[in-house]
Length: 485
Image (cartoon, rainbow, N blue to C red; front, side, top):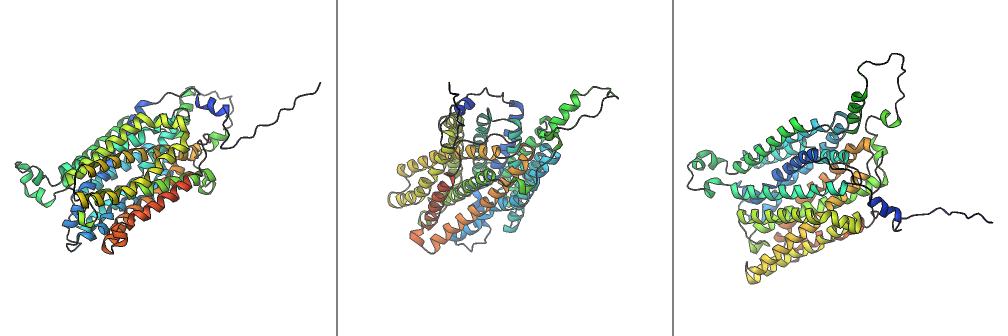
């Protein structure tokens, strides 16, 4: 009787395996809701602070008398918002690497303090260079975006990560909707509330944009206090050390020799940077960079497009109208993420989820010139508002890419160096986010000044960039990697 030889099973990224299905049906680890809630409060702060300036930034720039009254030049200076990302790219790796060493909590507290300080100084700025300093200050002191993702990686595993990471874009969208609503509603309070004696004071005439900044800064200070009092450290080496201390007897046995440290315990610290630049890390980070570049370019173009007169390629809307549109974007995006993200991931996988979101950029960059063409011929009517509604929906679909790529980045990182890998990813994407808005707004102005392709050259450039990003996304594996010890 012959003995059956069992051939080894060779798997590839495209091979549908029962093991994959079994892994997906693995029992989910309970979600630590208290810690997660605190992280989500921190997550609200950055978009609320950074995007509260969007409804009025172009009006503020025009009032500083640095454009010489030429509205076509506003785009060159509106890129000041990108300075946050540029300076953030200089320090975020150091903040994230420090969180692997000293813990997540101290770094989160420093980041929140920097955010509050910078937004208050922005509201008190009366010159272009003061705006520059305040935005740079925010980026230099804020490393929270990478540390938060590292914290979520500490708190989760692959069984519940999709359920937890879905909250990142949801909460970001909430902050991104509340921020512009605050900025658009509270800017220039002496005009918004003409019957108020308080807002008739000379202070509000000299600092017409301080009110939205102080409201936002107050929320950030509340978040700082919550983290200080209620947040518990999550960095792996510290939680393991605390657990060992809790399990040790109060009186040590003198005759017992010291235990040999386990390999994982011996490695209490991040790996060298060179060892972290694996193929999985580089591929994940590259796709995150592409997404960040396109996303921030759109977010910079949108308020500029909505603000500029119709004759200069925009829609000519007011700050309150712009704030309402950006608020709707945040609300629709958050609702869509909450209802559909985890279902989409479980249905089609992380890679396809990422690609579906990225593909919407192609349509988004086409809609900008279409809307301007429609408003030139038919005026600002229901046709334009219908296209704006479609644009908001596409933004919601686009944002599912963030949750998917966060899962790829987190899974590619060894647990002992999760903060460092997230620091690498956030440093890289911060550079892209600094380039994106500056390039987008400058190309907008250049396209109008030189009448390149009828003023629509900027959208052709970013349409091509969106195609290249889809090609890069196609190189991701069908599912995220298993967690690396």
